[in-house]
Length: 411
Image (tube, rainbow, N blue to C red; front, side, top):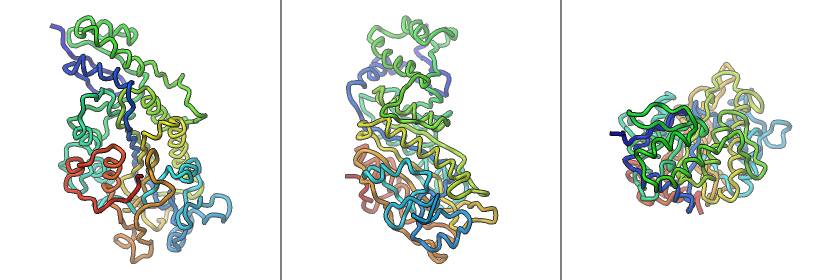
């Protein structure tokens, strides 16, 4: 008897069981009829230097602690910070994001992070993606718990997608999610009784459909075919958007394609690495500047490409922890504590840096060396889940956490 399973292979696609089909796949075709709110999360792996990303140029201790890597005050010359509010400024290589801040669409939360004081990249990333700081036994991620809490009949196989080689911790759990390396590289294989078919995606599907699917699922295949034929090499971004040619830029470009394909996408994940600059970090130019350039141009292109659809989309950035206030002897920064997060999109009350600033004086620092945390990262996650995604009861998504009021980031 023919197995009722189809394997989506290549690019790290997860297993989809046709125990849900044909009605499960049929919902994919129906998804094009309605637009859902989408959350796009971006993880800056390696602990970005938030003090040079969102610069507290109004803080004297910032400059005395960083004689060679500080970003100059606004108006001080080439490479100066871009003034946001008279105290904070953007790194000059984040210039592509400045218009969104001026338009009131980009918000920033500073002095934000995990209450757990670990300086381990592995542990801190795990705690942020599970949203259970200090608890190593958590099996599922916070995004997966959200998906499970909001299960609905219209959910499709493309409800949660990571544009990454493997499924991140935040999307692991009992709710279905896909990890796709590149959306133009996947095929279908019938169950154990079938051989791999090396021909086109359509003929592979047709061979399987004759055995395991009824005719109603053929309409659903049209939606899957949209994903297959959305060739990134031929895709033309809208509104003059120009993505960087990096892997990060490609991931964001493909997320835009998924959003536009109306396949029922609700949660998307992308990541970038190489933020761990212990030596020769640089200031307005250098290693950090290059990474921020890629970061800013990618996000700006995504928001520009999506155009009016950004009313239904929120982009949320995060990193596991920040860097030390003082530069080290190698003109870099070591593992720290507090950091900055960015929130861009529909309903966001942007044009503001949120959070209580703790100061950078030696007596104000965490353990005498780091930016102190005044906003738990789960408070930001909670507000996004409640105000953007519409889940009012977040107790199962963020177990053991109770937000004390809101930051007020959403209208």
